[in-house]
Length: 288
Ligand SMILES: [Zn+2]
Image 1 (cartoon, rainbow, N blue to C red):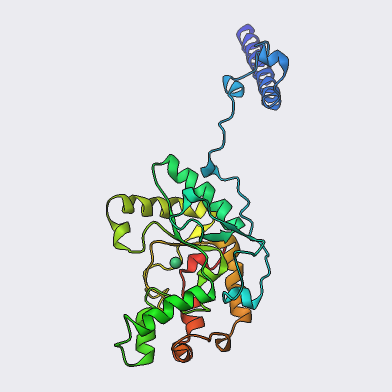
Image 2 (tube, helix red, strand yellow; image 1 turned 60 degrees about the vertical axis):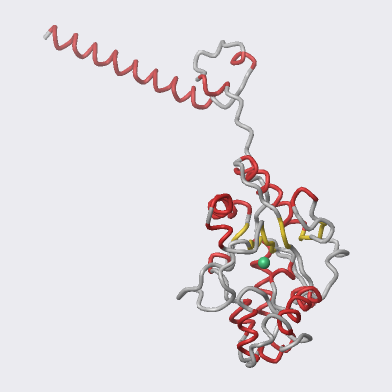
């Protein structure tokens, strides 16, 4: 009996002790975030060493950029590239360090801010990004198109076939995402560049990290999910927080009637260029 009493006394003692510990541990958790002067002097006996750590400075990869989809309303003329981006208040000239087309390369400010953060993060990982083409207006796209239509591809007699050949890698005027100020071409304009050596490293970095800065590759290999549109372009990246909204606005406001004013424009209907080329993108780039 005496032993049983002693045992009960011992159990009660241990139980009380554990409660006290628990209370202390509760208190400890509540006081942890409070950095008082006494803690700094080492007088807080509950303090864990971790709380004295200076928090790591967030790297650009933990991106602090505001990537909320922006509700920016733009006009039909804007969407088909018929405006002057050099004087548009929402556009900015790209700095020399970021482009080999200094002086003529412009982007939407939001897209450029995000690009700069991505550029810095890439640099830290030994990856060099260079914008080789950014915003292109209707007139610039028309120059590219008409040159190919009347030059390199002029031997193709059937107009639809000629247009399809150009459309493997070049947009018709009015239907290019480069009109929007959200899209850019990086480093080199060939897929093979991104399949070996340094180019491969760049592409692997982009596929791993670009989404953190709002960027997506709209022209991925064609397959069942993406049966139509331009061929794969490993160099073309699009700033989704704006571009997703611009695509929706495009599909709501621009019709095939608006696609005109360049050589061979009449093929637009047979080729159904808005549905197949404007809409024919990587499904991951359709929502943000
Ligand atoms: Zn491009």
